[in-house]
Length: 483
Ligand SMILES: [Zn+2]
Image (cartoon, rainbow, N blue to C red):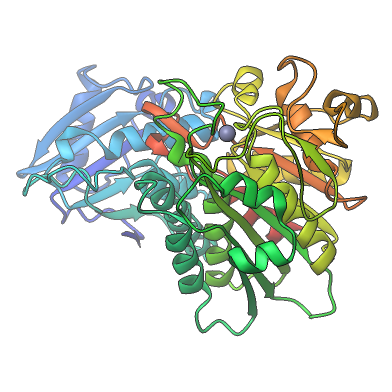
């Protein structure tokens, strides 16, 4: 939990003091009037602590742990590096047994305090549900952080949004056999329960068959899980004001289907519902923050599993939009699920904009790596607005093109289009996006391919630990608040 204090009191067991190189040179001390300040000055005067990026100097003052942490040159700090450094400070083993830490910043500005909030809530989050806990280890527990800064009204929203980023991560990180379609439906119903500004539509197998969601049902037909489409119509503004739609891909597990993924590519595939997790967490955040906008939140939920009923490569399947699709590869299933949901939402709810979010292609990792979400759009204004929100929230995105000639890449000899391109994988992200574009008519649309950014399959990246990152929640929230 984060609390705010106007001045350093030194009454907690531990303190973490961030200082830039310049502050150390000027021998400025934020611990004024306290013994800790004398100790810090002594460390600086003796040259033990210079304030270089990542420098750490622990002091014991009256039995309390005070750690000086260097940020380096102020001009070199970026939103990402600042969050990363603060996260490192908060996770130092010196604080292993501390439940309370006073945090003294190098400056009291909105951006810096928001960086502390995100470094604490998003940065120190870790997924340890299935690891036995050591009784006295507070590292993974929620610490009480006392930030020495003036309390400003925008911090409450930043805290809520950061917690909802973690809400998305919890959904992604847990087992695929636990977080299945019914679990997500229950989560969805829980989020909207008692909320008067929300109307919902939940489509099960029977309704999906009646409405001819042939593509989504084909993807799910090798699974014993139930297919679901979850839609919430949130009316935060005047009911006659236009609606924007957020649509998430929710493959609770993706084996690849009969075009089976190889070992090494399947182990993290419970993350293939990260788009749906982002949409559900954004729905929760929208309700929590009472955002005054009209939004349609929709998720297509299926599982791409294998048995004798699995859909087959080479078959032609027609879905809700009436467009026939040749199945070039059963592992390009996310676009099939999304196509039905996007076409349905577009026709039924008539949103003025559609933004989908999906772990869609491995190609986006080749193109952009793990640090930028791929953005494809048929509308420059919408793309610009989303890129602005991505930059403002440090939830990075980079635009890739959509252009008229790309349509030839998904031609089929036996169907209207094909779910894989004729380009042997070249430009896989933009051909995948082009497939989706066919299902929304002329509606302004943007597609976020988060296959590279949804999950950290290592120790950490930037200020995210191992596992899900909760990508998209901050972009969507900022977009709603500013557009
Ligand atoms: Zn797949």
